Image (cartoon, rainbow, N blue to C red; front, top):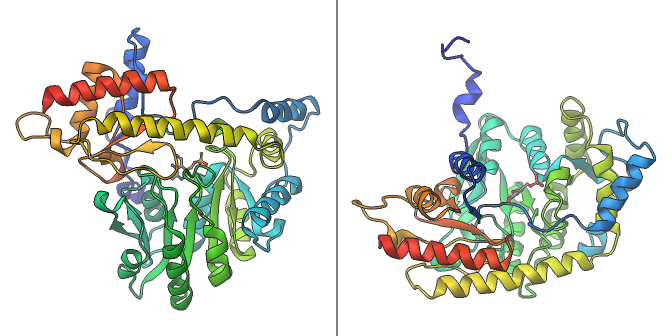
Length: 398
Ligand code: PLP
């Protein structure tokens, strides 16, 4: 094959590859060569998909439910999603306000392509999940990123987001609970943001993929708050991935005004057509079936979160906010970096993998050098061993 560089479309100049890919590949290589790798890098639940959801998929297969479905998803699923948002948040929506998508990621992609274009600015926050910014760029719009701070628990604040608004701003995208910080948009901040966004005629997009993973009984009724002020410009991206341990099924949804849902349907009709038919049936079971599995997983995540925070807290140099949702802690490792040793958190993470065989995700992946994302979607035993190796490694380099 020729080694000549292949000219790609211009848009690829704007799209970054995740800096975590190298670490993932290296972890795979080590694992294949028999090394005992502890993976605290996972962005997905370590729990199996609950059996009643798997059973629904088996039933779909047995019934040969294996053909194309309606492009926005089967009515049963769209009704189940609408019903969930009606019950949980009091939203007055029907299936016409819902499209089933291949994960929350595709829901957000549909929003970007349907609403954003050249000349538009879209405000979002960082440290954050990199896909949001990359999708804005793919749509040809300009991401405007505001920074949340460790000292403030990485809280997303209305005033900070609004300070970044210009006449070109088209939308504000908020991820709450946030990846990688686990921070929430507080309800009072949400009310403020909703009021101002309504006044300014901005779209608000809420990435709620971790909405069921909120700890400490914190109220987090963002859809109700925003819908009350600006239902006609509100888009909600949701997902079965995290709450029901279904990352591989690729099932999520977009909820919003009919015109955007129709646009998303048009995009989907020319790309992936519909969510895999079997996953749709499984998602109906997830949404309408018993929810004890979610509560049990949440309780276990909470136990792990508290334990990981306690372990890291034994060395005050790991400055760490207590995450209020999702399944990540995001400590600063800045105290362990220096020009003549480990210079960056990326180097920290790479050397930690090479020397102690612990996978983490460097803050660079989330536009936050100096930090490390530690996923607690791993058993307490693995977390204990992984964190002890991490602390040992950091102290050796301090
Ligand atoms: N939003 C955030 C913040 C995420 O971290 C992820 C996945 O990691 C997603 C959305 C999308 O998840 P999925 O496409 O599996 O629903």
